[in-house]
Length: 225
Image (cartoon, rainbow, N blue to C red):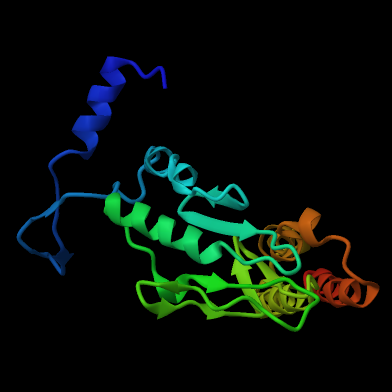
């Protein structure tokens, strides 16, 4: 990785022999060792974590399984031909073994299984440590709601509902007799990002879903006036 000895020594000092304690209303608990993990909130922690999990895909012996990693989120996918068997259980087992070897835990409750298929038959459920992974029709992946029918109804419903809840901020701006510019800034900084997040992914939605988003946009723009 072409890392200098000085930087390597600094990282080792940063991570080794760390301890933690709890401060509750001025009462400090005794310290406990932190034999693993990186300090949460530090600038370099995400980079160190990415380095730590960089070799994850090397553990997968099946070339048909792909890995997609972003920070602490990892997604596996495979394309199964008609009549062929899925290798996802084998790949999942290998990921679990890698996690155990690297002193990491996979949360089964936060792990979901989704099948994209035009056929009524589905592959058998996937298990981790004897626990069956929940198979879902939709789930949130990096802030975007994905459906197994590749439609975006759930995502649009979620973001419009969330944006509507923030319209009270604009009402408060009017009640406080703040300048319209403040309300417009609130709209563009708090509401519009929710409606436009990851739009290149789902931007080709049908007209009726576009209309739902546009209605929220129009309501938000009327409030500051």
